[in-house]
Image (cartoon, rainbow, N blue to C red):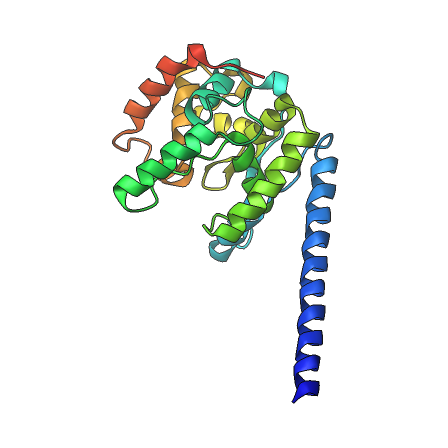
Length: 235
């Protein structure tokens, strides 16, 4: 019996060590990509690969609408609209907006269900680059680790540049340039303030708004964002 217990403890110890080792290797893998994307534009993200797989279940030859553009070639109106809509304290925080998280927790508690997340632009970027839309504590923990990597190794302008280029903006539509062409037939550099505000209003549920462009509430959200844009601080 003692031998059996000893063997079980040994197996447990080696299992834990193996698990820790694999977890560390995974973090090194994430870190390697974060370092690479500090200078090189991402060609594909985790969210892109997931959406493409979904599209190809219906149409095997489906492709994504995605075109990288440098930070200077994206309208300042869109930059201000996204900051106003998604993360007003983006230039000041270090990856986590604790006030926003507290407000989200209070709102969720009041509603009795998950209705707000309080995620910053940096957290959203970490999720889009590497993770999945599923909600779990494990995913949130990994998201936090990647967020710290990004905030430590990139400056705010690079974080915002990559974010604007890779976030989902419709069914198979990713990034500011593809969104501008998909909805307005123009480049990201030519977006007007109302167009930018409307695109920012679509970010929380882009595929829904792609299918329902006159959805109730979209115009109201657009007007609120448009009013907040002058106060938005850009990196």
